[in-house]
Amino acid sequence: MKTALVTGANRGIGFEIVRQLADRDFAVWLTARNKKRGTEALLELKNQGRSIRFLELDVSDTESIANAVKSLKGDINRLDVLINNAGINPKGSDNILSVPADKLEETFRINSIGPLWLTQACESLLISGSRVINISSGAGEICNGMGSYSPVYSASKTALNAITCQLAHGLRAKGVLVNAVCPGWVRTDMGGAGATRSVEKGAETPVWMATDPGFSETGKFFRDMKAVSW
Ligand SMILES: NC(=O)c1ccc[n+]([C@@H]2O[C@H](COP(=O)([O-])OP(=O)(O)OC[C@H]3O[C@@H](n4cnc5c(N)ncnc54)[C@H](OP(=O)(O)O)[C@@H]3O)[C@@H](O)[C@H]2O)c1
Image (cartoon, rainbow, N blue to C red; front, side, top):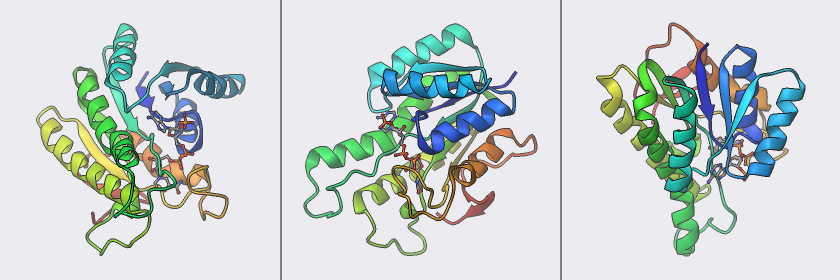
């Protein structure tokens, strides 16, 4: 049975990715920074007949990452799919000239550095063919001229894209595939009720990338199952 771990999976796109991977017979670790919220999410999916496990994991905290990965290594010796999904787009960070230092740091810790820390911690579990999938955003696209939308969030996703490229280089010799995905504008707490996409659609490309046996790309940025410019 293939194995997967998804961060920030107690709600939104991460929760839906867990549901879809479990339905495709993956052994999935649903992780969340808050134990109560995470176990409630786990219960909801288990009640629908799926076998999923929970791990408490705050991606902005190296100790939390170390504890979660230690526990994971007690159960498995191979991780086929790591999905760095957790993210924030905090209110009050919409002015690049006056964003408070703590908000700036928190956004980059969760959106950009956390995925790198967790991938480092999981490295020994990743094998040839394993996939690291970083949930990024079109807001971080820089090639087509970045707009003024949510500047700190956008910059943190550009940083995540750069980290994706560097991890792809760093893990290439091992045969591990590392890519970024934009899920589109999705109806979640972050995307809001007016967003154009369902969570099912938002999860589509990450789940395809996680499960398609023929997938062999690395160091790229995808939307709607196609590579797009950074
Ligand atoms: N929705 C969109 O339109 C859209 C568009 C482009 C990209 N994205 C990206 O898609 C991903 C998922 O977004 P979403 O729309 O599902 O957002 P969401 O509904 O706000 O869910 C975000 C998830 O991340 C978790 N999280 C936040 N900080 C964390 C931390 N330090 N450690 C672990 N988990 C943490 C949250 O946990 P709590 O419940 O504990 O807060 C929650 O489970 C994000 O990376 C986002 O940037 C979303």
